[in-house]
Image 1 (cartoon, rainbow, N blue to C red):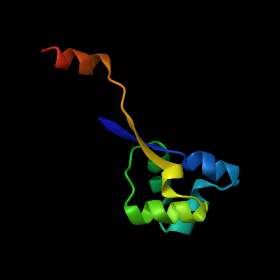
Image 2 (cartoon, one colour):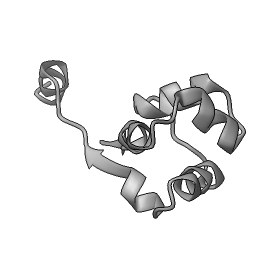
Image 3 (tube, rainbow, N blue to C red):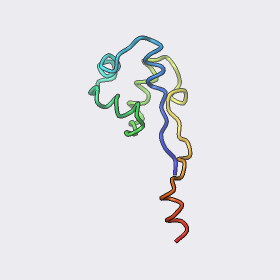
Length: 80
């Protein structure tokens, strides 16, 4: 299973931007930025594009999907 990986925090910190400032620029709540940075929320294409535009970069430079590492629990279930 793939998991969303974001580099929002790195881009944001490089520009000395707070979560609130980024949220205001892309018209979302700060909590949305928090969840995005933790990989707990998949952005819409529009939101991803808006964030990329703020940082003047391509969406792919900020968002990617990586194979999620299996946990011991996952391995136990597969062996049933």
